[in-house]
Length: 199
Image (cartoon, rainbow, N blue to C red; front, side, top):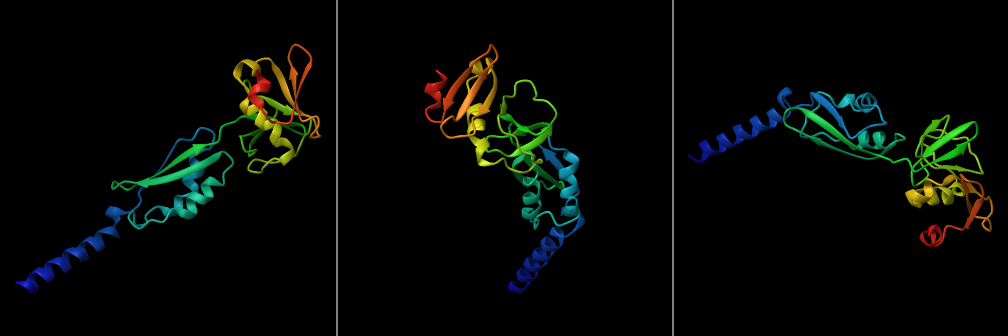
């Protein structure tokens, strides 16, 4: 009786082991969620070599690192289901400002990551000028641009509606300036006590 039980358990373990490596439990479909600016097809192409691999033993670390290196991607996670679907859930970076970039503008997030190069500043996005850099998507703006981005990200909507652009003064003494749509310049100086300065 003991031998029978042992054989039965061994057979079950062997069957389960074989099932995890059978086409019944491999990656059949790659799905992408949460993207608006990053093409789904690009992420699916990056992960395409994972198709037909055993679902339960899948290591997606390298693929996730490659995905998060894309300009718009801030974070990515993955989950798998027994129907053979591997899903990548992406969180994209928000645009907080457009930094002058030579003949165009660089859309950037809060940390100064260049998301995209555009010809004109999109509606609702605050322009940061005074200094300019020639960069490509995926790169990071120099530290000199960060004060202007910080001001743009923290500015209340009511004030932002009255501001034509955030100007980088180029020196710590001048700091950051606000160019008003109605004319005139507000000198904010260093990015200290911004909430009080905005008031």
